[in-house]
Length: 97
Image (cartoon, rainbow, N blue to C red):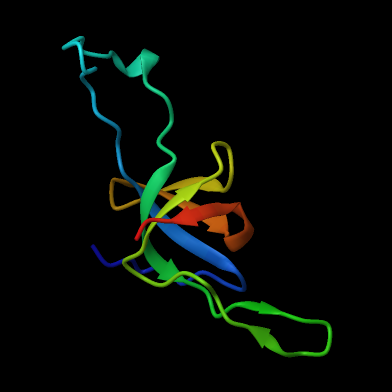
């Protein structure tokens, strides 16, 4: 899925990947019991942060990366009925290989 959003600075647009709705024991979880996803696919990446002397710091993530991010990081938005999150690169904890 492509996005029309173009993040600024060191921000990243991520589409959350929902967790399993059934536990290993076969119990179906209702929406109220589910945790917020902390994993998602990067849809758009900003140009990077500017230093005080005007140099651009390259981003460590790219479009298509699957990342793990801070539980309550970023701003949740809705675009074309899709739930998306705009995060700062510093809210991303890890990339999946």
